[in-house]
Image: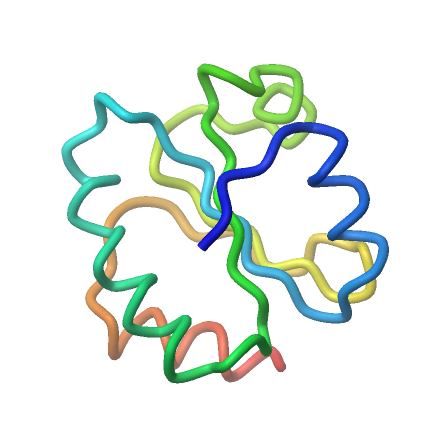
Amino acid sequence: MQVVNSNEFEQIISQETNVLVDFFATWCGPCKMLGPVLEELDQKWTGNPRIIKVDVDESSELAMRFGIMSVPTMILFKNGQPVKQLQGYQPAAALQANIEALL
């Protein structure tokens, strides 16, 4: 999974149909727990949705733009538009069900 900056974020969101964005921080315990879950789902989904990560400390303008108040927060984008926001750690099965229901 790729950690992206603001420019890369805009490019990926505009070009990909389905993108799950993980807003995280390196100091966040639940974010570290979520990492392996996202890695597992990224392998299962093989690019649909594409999963990218945004470090809220490095890209604070994106965090403010999307109203990220706590991490981890994930947002699913379809055709460049946010369609679902999920907060906090979720086990793989629950996260998979939440996302796949929207694809």
